[in-house]
Amino acid sequence: MARVTIASGLIERLEEHARLWLPKEGCGLLLGNLRGPVTEVVDIAFSGNVTAQDPRKTFEIDPSLIIRLQKEARAGGLQIVGVWHSHPSGVAEPSETDKARSEVAGWVWIITGIQADICTTNAFLVSENDPHSFLPLSDI
Ligand SMILES: [Zn+2]
Image (cartoon, rainbow, N blue to C red; front, side, top):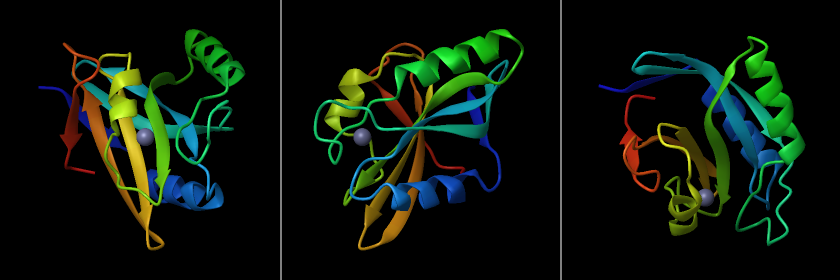
């Protein structure tokens, strides 16, 4: 059974960053370790939101950040284990766009929603069989 652990304090950092990015969506890549069925999320590499579309409604991770993190992972650093982004004035659930664009099976998606200045953060594990299927993780 797949399991995900999230380092203490990480959610608070994500929520702080989500507020800094208002009214745009904030984003970044989740870094950690894959240990058999357990994905350990230990850190976040925040990215600029480089979308060519409306950054209040969608996000795009900076490609140069992805390349740098892939190199660091190959050199023995933390692995890229998922993605975080925020939903300004939205709920902490994957949108239809999020589900459609999800490509990597087994990735962790963490989403911070902000409504009436209150942040809510939820984590999801992308199905190993279907990259468009998100399984909610309740134990964060
Ligand atoms: Zn989204």
